[in-house]
Length: 137
Image 1: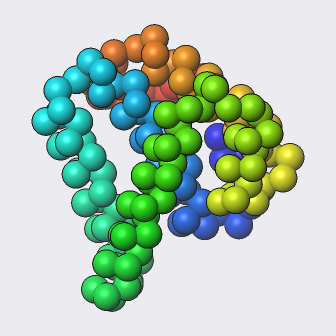
Image 2: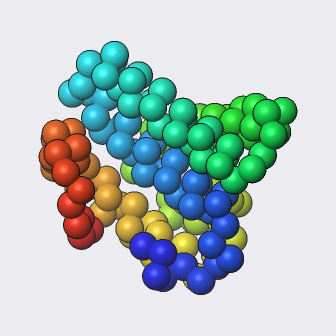
């Protein structure tokens, strides 16, 4: 996915793209998975994000502020993901452009996420969690 993105490859860009993936993941698997398991996955992901921020070298005050920002961003992403199939391409482009500023690569990302949705809807959670796989969508 990143081979088509010629941006500065910032932590925030990668995190935003990861959070979009995670949002779609939760949207499709929450219907078929227990709330407890989904909550455990959610908690694990955000704990790992916090650990990553600590490894970058931010202080405790900064980490709390950033985590709050990332959680708020994730909930904004979730609100868009809930209506993703219903919104027009230009709205998707505008949303992605607000956070990534990629220009022409946004069309690629929109097609990519549409294929990712199809992939998630056709596969069970266990398919994604068994081992590391080379997915192609």
